[in-house]
Length: 253
Image 1 (cartoon, rainbow, N blue to C red):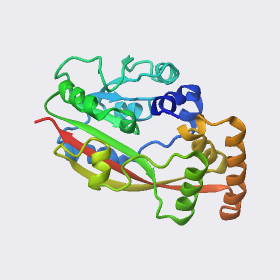
Image 2 (cartoon, rainbow, N blue to C red; image 1 turned 90 degrees about the vertical axis):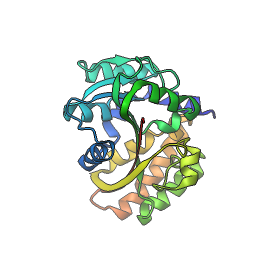
Image 3 (tube, helix red, strand yellow; image 1 turned 60 degrees about the horizontal axis):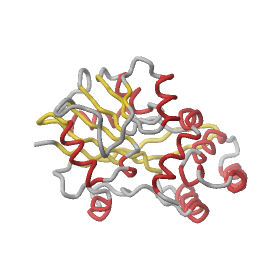
Image 4 (cartoon, rainbow, N blue to C red; image 1 turned 90 degrees about the horizontal axis):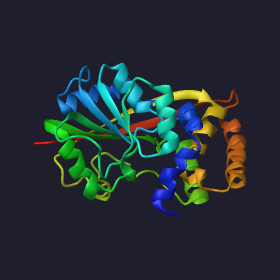
């Protein structure tokens, strides 16, 4: 299964992605401002790989001037419908359809692992003004929580897909694999959680690419087994999902 196939699989389920995927905690956006030195109100931002607009909406709520960049037709159509006042351009990280030096920040929320860094880094730096920053972050499940770590192992065995490349902030091997180790980086992480109905938790799992590219019956079988396991852990069917957001900020000098 190619990376492109997995990346494009999200276009088959934008409604579920928008409904079940988590937002990002307020502390993340405070860290973005701190590390970049740029206040979000009025900041000109290109949100690349914007998907259904989860990060885009949160940036707009904080007063940023955002243009969303999204390659996928299904995701772009959903974003256009849900955020009609946000400019949207079709394109990807390798060739951003934006002018030189036009943005204060270029953000990738849960999207950098789909980029080709050898092309995406120069493109981001081209679009940034001097003093602007490339900002990359992931919501990663907290594998140190026993039930989450055990579930992650089951998912990897079932789908063959493990977590995104950055599992620990500052891990040089992970930075190298993400194509970011040559940049002057600031990194932070922030831990947070949300409590959701069991159906929402299972719906969230099903929106990940490893499941979207599988036969539907194989996905249903896995989710049915997870439902039984989690009911034993959470009898009230309210699941606490714990996340660590890994944030990297690289300035354009």
